[in-house]
Length: 97
Image 1 (spheres, rainbow, N blue to C red):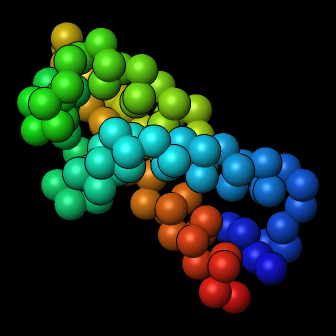
Image 2 (cartoon, one colour):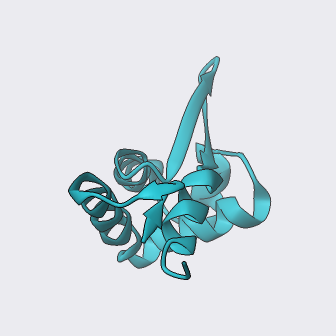
């Protein structure tokens, strides 16, 4: 089985476990779906669309970043999040190979 174009090892298995653990929470799954649909969004836009507090969103974004699923960047006082599509594709296509 391949992961990111190379044979899988135990480190890859641990990475995929982190990914699936992060996606096991309904709110985090909704964040990923929203970013997949809309592209890069600010924290306030995500919180508004999901009707959650910024504090709760920050917790969920942190988990998604640690799993490698989401990337963030800061512009002034605004934090933007985007989906790491390359990692998502590598993770899920490895099951079909």
